[in-house]
Image (cartoon, rainbow, N blue to C red; front, side):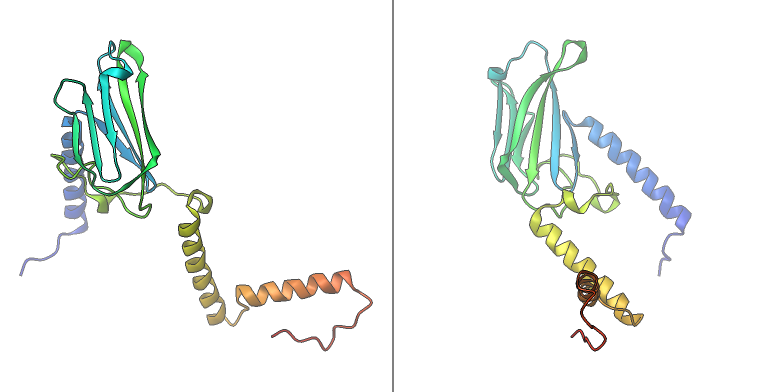
Length: 195
């Protein structure tokens, strides 16, 4: 039975995989980056091209990027769905007289990482190695934010109960009572009970 790799062997293997992945991604005719919410693709093109020379088709499940009359740079089924109305592309001038097609795709599912732009991509990345940047609750869409807040609240309340302290709801009621008491000092609250 083979033993599991030591931490140093795992670290060396991860480093080698990262180098290989970087080399593979460099071979693609485009560069792409992603956050948990969206994906951006940059395709370098000749500086003499204009918007009318470019063909970009974005559907919920497919992406095609081509210079008219040439083999497409990208043409395939997207790894996951996108929100078409929130996705866009532009042709931008860059230094050195070149241009680039800049494509922004808004992910339909904002809770998953993509291993490639399209399913027929020659190279894929290992999404288990992605270390996301810290995000704020305000960055999340309403439904996701509500779900995260509910999970965080449940964990907080569970810890409070275990320590014999008030839950967030109980603390809210106590704070409300204190505020009411401060606003009405003439009233006697000595026998007030919160349920």
